[in-house]
Image 1 (spheres, rainbow, N blue to C red):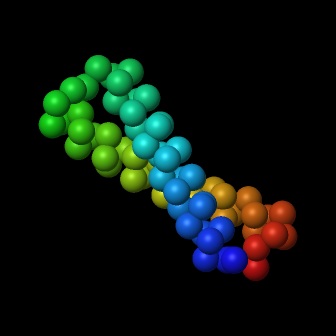
Image 2: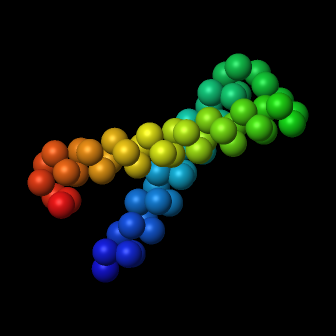
Length: 65
């Protein structure tokens, strides 16, 4: 069950990171290869930050060891 929840969390953080990256790159008006590279880097950074924030929050609430 734990692995299933981890996979759901990874997918959720990845999706949220991709959405945030798309919004940022679109707002800046970047297109083409440069926009794609910026979106990939921003999405990975955002997904990692969402994961770290989620783990810290769940540990703070005592739901994770």
